[in-house]
Image 1 (tube, rainbow, N blue to C red):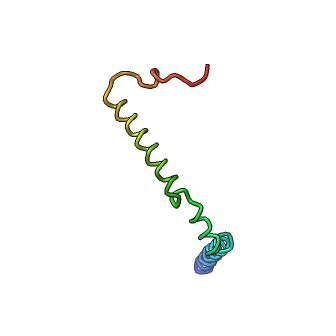
Image 2: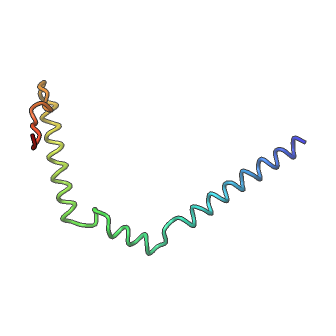
Image 3: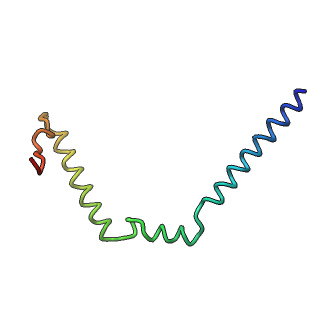
Length: 82
């Protein structure tokens, strides 16, 4: 009885893994779709990447300034609307 239970458990586990792999294979995009996605990523556009680098540099500078002071930097910022 124990060997039968072990066999059923192992076969059900293999079955579940096969169903999962089958679903993954069906859902995953094809090579053409993958190339189209890669072409439209922000990293492929040089102008967009330069904007991201500039924004990251500004954020890092603000964090550096905030780390060097004991003042609450968030209170100094005023919202653009009232």
